[in-house]
Picture (cartoon, one colour):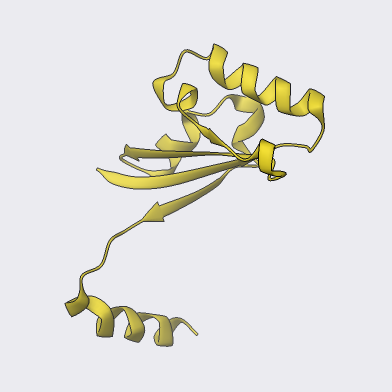
Length: 94
């Protein structure tokens, strides 16, 4: 399984915050009901970390209204021995 960070933005209004939170909590999905929120710090986004098979599967756990605006990032961990490989990959992409 791959690990993904899902970032879901919403508008910075009290009504949008309330709506987003309620929608996530009402889905009954374990993933969504355990989202972390930045609203109280002025960052109107929810973050969810999941282990699933693909980015498409990660996107599909979201309520339909939030799927198109979500940012989904594949997460990896590196060990010190991999540093040169990672640097080389970044240089070949640039």
